Image (cartoon, rainbow, N blue to C red; front, side):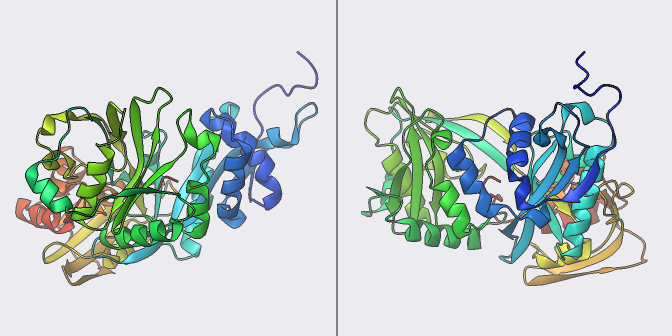
Length: 422
């Protein structure tokens, strides 16, 4: 073995907050952690979103024979984002991202240390909850995150797809048309903001996010075409066509009205030469797409996966920020697993709420319902039913009627949908 290569047990890393000087090392580290190489245009788009004070880094002493970037062995950060919760309130939320640990530092408690430091900083800045999208779903439950939204991927046989008469009437005479993204960027942002205001779980997009999403870099194309844009007065869709020309992949479909939704799908299903149209996040579980078609069977669900995970950091503040489908008055005993994630949100709270608002306070009263903070996070956006969690042993209640009432109150009018990957 070369004497320049470190040997023996890994050393204990030191945690610190990032600086902009760490960007080159972060680029190398993230590429190793997730198995891809950042292209220069994509990384340039990320830089305006990078807030160094929201990133925790783990460093080892630089060893002889290794590059300075090799000393970075762990990272966890957060974007500043805004999310709509049931009832329409828009909450500032940290979007946790860039989480990784170097291979030789695995199972040594480093990820726990990173989350403890990150969460503590988020709480210090007043965050009531945090969100993330998980590359490995088995990791984040132990840090208090619960899967709160679901992504569905679909494939539509365009050759057999035809709008039903009622859908044609709904779509009306307004036809979506192609446009250049840069020319209609303001319209895209306006429509997206309207959609966010009405959609629980929706993530708002800053100007920097739009810059990144519309950059249309080679990495974003992933072997497909340029980003094509269809616009409607009340909506838009973006898509790419595969190299063979047979498949169109919907990247974004945002409609502020049912008519716009029907019209955009009418245009997507009229694309010449395309045999099938695929879509991921753009088609939530309660999307009316199958009901728009003469034959709903031309829509095939190809995958159902977890989407956004929610972690309540301040339980009373988070529960008071949303509304509830029916009146509810219940005492919850929340277990945060001893604060493994660096923040202990355990304790009893009394939730009193309904369609017009809610209040939630700490209490010493006897609990009606007992559950973990991850289970509570899973239900927070109204898309995960409480009953199945109870049947899985994750929620307990002495009175079934109380559990049923709370479950009904937590449900949203529509499936939550986040819309923006982070």
